[in-house]
Amino acid sequence: MRGLLSRSEFKRYDRQIMIDGFGEEGQERLKKTKVLVAGIGGLGSSAAIYLTAAGVGKIRMIDHDKVELSDLNRQILHWDGDIGKEKVSSAKEKLERLNPDVQIESIKEKITEDNILGLVADYDIIVDGMDNFPTRYLLNKAALTKNIPFFHGAVYGFEGRVMTIIPGKTPCLRCLYPKAPPPEKFPVVGVAPAVIGCIQATEAIKYIIGTGELLTGNLLIYDGLTLEFMKIEVKRDSNCGECGHLVFSSRRAEK
Image (tube, rainbow, N blue to C red):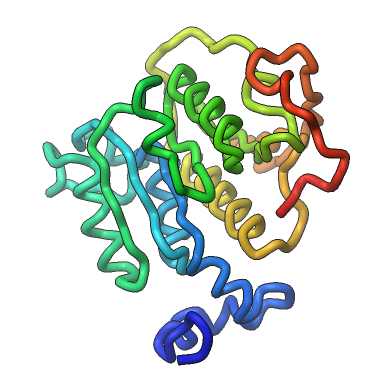
């Protein structure tokens, strides 16, 4: 045993430990980090898989739904034999088999205004795997209240969007979307949440180990039909009802 990592962990993660700016210190930071994945559908499945593979210390998954046949084109942690099971149970089974070194916690619960602060308490990072804006706004508000980085992702058809929110340093989700779009059943091809969920996981890993440039103050838009990525600058709304009261730091928005 050297530091926090066992001999088997050095072997498991040797390729990423080789990366300049990652190293053993970065791997130990991952091991000490607790990540909350809100929603374990298309986005959450992809993000959770790669965060587990990367070796974060603990993942808490929250979802109140059961697996349905229509989920299987995109929610890759759930398989045909899982139809009717709780999504968090189905996902926990797969992730524990993927990497037994990561502690996986599953909570079958609907995220509400009453329970959100308790659900995110003591967690270091929130990953947005939701498919509706009312719940995303609750996560955004909780992240701001608890000073927790929030990694937003969304998909529609072949398109996806990602933004990294650091409380007190970047615009928040309400700055980007002051009002929620009308609720609807929306189309999605399975590869879209795969791409976006992987980008969310990438952003989370970069934040944890302290390397690279984050999507802070920028919305990344992915168009799968043209295979183009575009960044749009997002300005902080000084009158934002969620983050407008915060004293913003002028320092670079990263860990």
